Every structure is written in structure tokens, then in C-alpha cells.
Length: 261
Image (cartoon, rainbow, N blue to C red; front, side, top):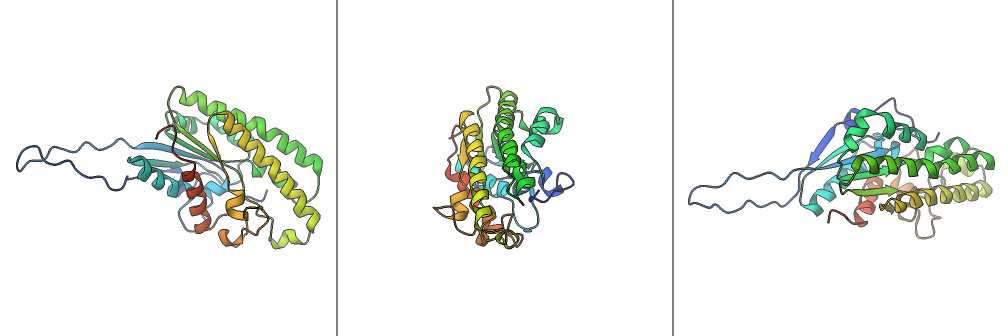
């Protein structure tokens, strides 16, 4: 798999971090010389699920869930507690198992106000180095049903609670990647086609569950999705740099804050 595996939840990622809302002004005093005790706003709960695009720490920078949590706090006028549950190497099957049986994950999702997800590229990771269409077909064929089941499970945990649901698609990290260039244009074309299949499955599932699909492909690879994403990636040419994480967070924020706003 091209996404680097991590042994478990990262200490920096698995803990909840509360991000305050900016610009809050205290009410004027009711009696001269006395101010009423301010009632702090109840923080909104945000859960980030996914693979190493969510969890990867090598940039030594803020992850996109942290940045997006800050943007959401500012837009919604309430503090946001961010719980990053991303784990490197996670596939859609892994995440489905987690949301079905991991009590900590289920507890975090139950009543969450914001849920962000990046999952799916590791499903085709083992097929990347060659042109095995059967491998790609089996992997991408399972992805859609897995994501549907993940979102249905989250919906069941949320019950009637209103929450923001955002799921990203993927940028093309293969364009310009040195160890893939030697495979030639035919491989570049094949991967682009398979990535389109993966992204389509992701977006169809989240849209069916009344969430919004967030486009990273054109944000990183340009309007025609054919540019090298290197300016936004770490030297491994896979994971987002500090700027890449900012772009992901901004793209999610651009999708708005319905149904909470």
C-alpha cells in the first residue's frame, strides 16, 4: 500500500483538542460595577476518520482536521473539539470494521456534530505497481458498498442528531512521482482512470447519505486534473505538506456548514 502504515492512533491525533471560536464579546454588565458570569458555549464535537492523509504526522504541521476545526469554530461561532481518529494504511474494509465494532470510535461518533472522512485509496494500493485490471476491479468494486455501509453505520449512531458530513475524494499523487514515471504514459493513464472510479464511488456514497463530497483532485492537480501536485506534497510525493493540509481544510470549509448553519 502506498499510504504508510502506522502502528496505531497517534498520540497527537487520538486525543481531543478543543478549538475556541474567535471574536466572542462579553455582554455588558447589568448592574454598575458587576458583571454576570459568562456562560461558555458548549463545544461542537468533530470526528475525523480515515487513512494517513488524515493522520500522517511527517509534515510536522497541523493536520487538515485541526485546521478545518478552527475554520468551523470561526464560521459557527462555537468552540470545536476535534478528535482525529485517522490511522495510516486504513482501507474502507478496515474503517467499516472500526465503526461497527470499536467501542471508542462508536462513542466518539455518537452525537458528533461534524464528521469528516478520507478513505478509499488504500483499497487499490496493492494494484498500483502494475496494470492488473482484475485487481483494480475487485478493489474498486468493494469500495462503494463499504463506504455506503460506513456512512449508514454513522447515520445509525447519529440517529436524529443533525450533523455535518463531509468526505473528500483523492488527488493524483502519481503524476510526477519519480518511481512511477518509469512505468510510462500507459500506467499514468490507467491509474488516472482507476482514481476516477474510486472518486466516483466515494462521491456517490456520501451524496446518497446527504453529505457533501469535497473535490481534492482539481484542487491539487488543476482544472484538467493533469498537473503535478508536488507543490502541495511532502518529499514522498504522496502525503500533503503544510500547504496541502491547508488546501484540504479550505476545500472542506468551502462546502459550507449545512445543516448546522
